[in-house]
Image (tube, rainbow, N blue to C red; front, side, top):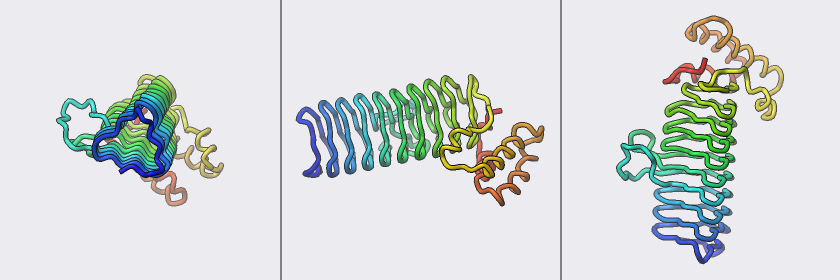
Amino acid sequence: MIHESAKIHPSAVIEGNVTIGANTTVGPFTYIAGDVTIGENNEIMSHVVIKGNTTIGNENRVFPQAIIGEENQDKKYGGEDTRVIVGDRNVIRESVQIHRGTTQDKTQTVVGNDNLLCVNAHIAHDVIVGNHTHIGNNAILGGHVTVGDYAGVMALSAIHPFCTVGAYAYVGGCSAVVQDVPPYVLAQGNHATPFGLNLVGLKRNGFEKPELRALQKAYKEIYRSGKTLAEVKPVLEEMAQEWASVGRFIEILETSERGIIR
């Protein structure tokens, strides 16, 4: 079903069970097919491909050559009905690829709200991207990666499958991340190592000096105290009673499968 206020270019091809909401525009030579639902006030530009079981929310801008919902590149994938979910107000630049999930994991790839996915960024199968993130040009999020809210993964960086980039973390350009980047941490290099807190990003997002000092203290406990992570955890738990934001450090220490960058 295509809403009467949607504007579809005559050269666009739309086939299958496709729903397009009010005031959405679809540009020339775009191909939309399958079980696709696109919400309201989206701008889908020329030469875009949207396939499979894909849901796109409202007020997104999708630039030319982007591909959303295509089959993933996992050799185990056998055509199962997996999906892609994209939220609201995302900017998806030229040639970005967002591939559908696998039944071996989440069955879906999810991009939240208010994200900027720059030119040729690759969002692989079963990736979870939070809200307000910045994924740079040619950045690669391998399968099963999680990127937390307000995090940044800069140009030409690659995140190894099953790794997490925590909320408010920042991965500098041309980095190779093979272990989890804790929340708030600035990481850079091949292999990526920690370089303190992402203070610029934290200040931009409203963190005040007392909280920043608490996070810096937590960072020093993890990276500079000489303690084991097991010894650090009770210290962080005590700090988290006053500063809930410290709890994000505890969470990644408890859930990390690949260990954190050191």
